[in-house]
Length: 621
Image 1 (cartoon, helix red, strand yellow):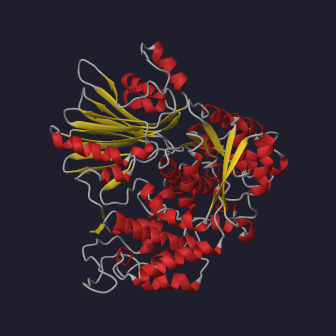
Image 2 (cartoon, rainbow, N blue to C red):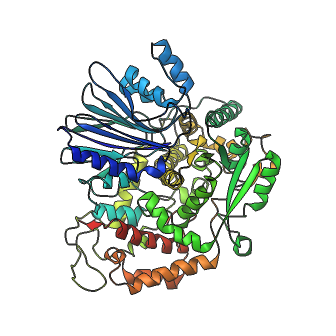
Image 3 (cartoon, rainbow, N blue to C red):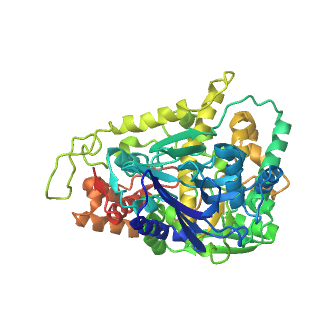
């Protein structure tokens, strides 16, 4: 895995552009600490930082193909899992390779198949090719959005990068947010509208999209989407198909020339990965004194410890548990923002960051069971008819609560400017609609985009909408978290359940199959019968573990109280101090986002928002 960045325009580059490239490169060093390189052409500059995983000798980038008509140059972040098949086909067409890694395969695929090369790939990727023969830049992102690609156009220059911080290192890109950016942070965050980069004029190439920048114009095109089609297989055939797809995806993703491990929570998904991958090292995360403070609930019925012990004994792996303390969890909230460049999932982010930091001491690549819930229907909102039939994002049905934190008029343009006091507003914020209409508009557009069969009944059509919502919205938040927290520690985390063959196939599997035996992920459970101990196979879903220690809430509450005393804290440009004060005293159980972000995480999220505004010196426009 790696970091990529660059810029292209219609005029000749100057010597100062080299310094800009170096600044962009430095921001991406954690993503690629092993090697780095810069390519400078007549009107384009490409940057690469490498985390060496496969073919350590021949993977150096930018990778250049010299032709009589100009250089063709690749910067690539990702991993192909069908490299052998692609190379075999390309070799039959006359291509030659120096090594066995996937980087050469990506460039040669472009040389032979052009923009359609992405249709051949099975993997996770974001890459850019500068084609000196025509002066254009071609870019693409994988079908599930596992690897990031941000971009902007400023003054005739196209700037791109793996992370927002790389774009902000370019002098043309300013840290500005407008009303839509505030709405993204406060009404949707830590989720984002697909394609939004939150900062003004900054975007993210959507999952399954490719792009061409040429002659000062950008063209984006969708090459993959979840397409509805009749499912004609019997239940028994579907089970066999699922077992093959899951097993094959996991097997393909174990390719590595560096130490490989697996995350293991003792839940169904991570246990499947650990069992079928044959890994020798497993890792889990836990929290100090959680056995003392853990309280079973509807969404988290039991803790992981006994199931982890059962699985490690069953598999015979060398297992390490990373135990986190409340204070380091709170302190890492800010480092998590450094990694994500945005406020995130509070301690759900910071815990993963600290966990990955420890795992990296022993391995460079990890396998994770993330995204099985989105694909196989594991979340409560898939199975609870009341939630399922309620309009709105099922993981965030608290728009009125979120809006209650906003300064009056902050996203409707009716801000009163005051030069003193706790809030200094900006009368230049453009109207972006009332909070409910902003969120509802995003939701309506998302469900309208879901592909359906004419033969689908009302329930089956709704399940396709739910799948589409989860795939393009909720799953993206988790993939953002996974990528930024892991790559900040130079750890590559692979997600086999995001294999596009699995996601496309499961989109059309009837809900009655997925819900086999009335269990969450019933189809997946049945498909891997015999692979896992019965106790693991029947374990009720339990989400990613979080701390229940009262000390954590105490620490983050004290920090938010301190901000309330700091009248000039940038948070108060957006959030009403009285609403934050009420949050500290009311102890409301209103969830902010999903199952894991309740009151303590809402407090922590506001701390992250303040740190983000302060760190980037963000201007409201």
